[in-house]
Image (cartoon, rainbow, N blue to C red; front, side):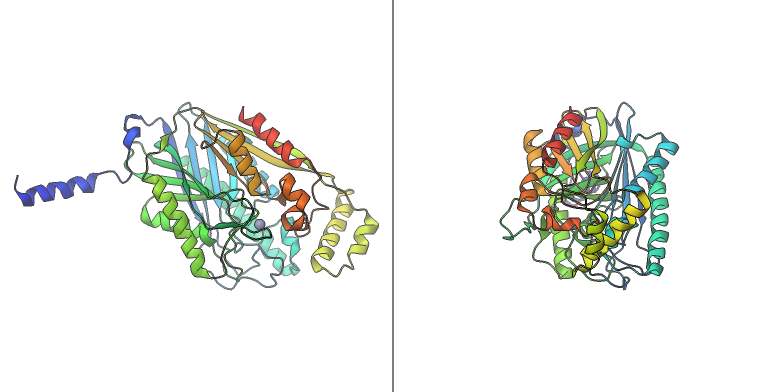
Length: 445
Ligand SMILES: [Zn+2]
């Protein structure tokens, strides 16, 4: 073989080589199936954004498109689950119920088989939920919010349909990377605990040659910017970067336990792009490494735990708070009085959703509702199986912050005052951390 011919054969070989190294996974036969779907959820008309209580006008254009993406997985024994990732501030409980009821009726999926998550981008639309009441929103704008919510609910139902329709033989493998731009934001800033792990689930075609999808997470707020433009923040940038690098693949991001973590420094668009690249690069590094093939059986569990508020204010107390110097406290008082009037009472408890997906003994994937502080992921990873445990926050319902016992006793924003923008009656009563951890252990068994 002459040199030129050898070169062309080598180039030919390089061209047909799989994009993803298979290493030890070569011998695995594809018994899984996977399907993907993606839909633009950028609101069609200018409307209120969420994320900051001081927002006082509708969006003025976009810095990027907002998406919802879904990955349907079917295990070797035929169990189907759907993971949904959205460029939204939260997951309203009403939205979750509506979407999951439809998926149960259409596809026979149990509640435990659907994981609804969000990136917690602060440049997404205001949702029809309690958090939106932190802002002074005119009635005409509320109309738009409710209309957009209905459109969003319908899109998510179709997204799940489409992902299930797309099921094809696939291989699954996991690994964990690292990205270091999240900082603990509680004072003194940068000193408290952090979780820089980047969990990655790689989904390839049956022959392993084509990357079809990647699910990854990171424990950090999507708060690089506070402008009036639609934007998926660093998470949206990371997904876009990965999808451009791997044409045909779908990249799905979930927020980890980053309630007390911020991307620092921030407030420059290019920093968001940079953090997106850093995160995508961390994912790429895992994709290029030897990953652990998932071969175990998939099981799912979903329960709610009743968490208790410290105290419930009475009508007279709420009426006096209407005169508060803080517009946020006054708005909460008005909202709670409205609830008291329409529902007759203010509940002393709130049901927190806890979900666990187990992939044999290779991966335990925990999904907790609310804005969960980093102590939970560090503790659960330590107490379950280190290196084989993922903890997703902001899943299935985002009703307020979920402080650890440490953060609750310290107070501050995540421990106490954030209950005001979330329209909750008071901070949580002590004891919530152990209740949540016990429930995770129970579901993980
Ligand atoms: Zn937050």
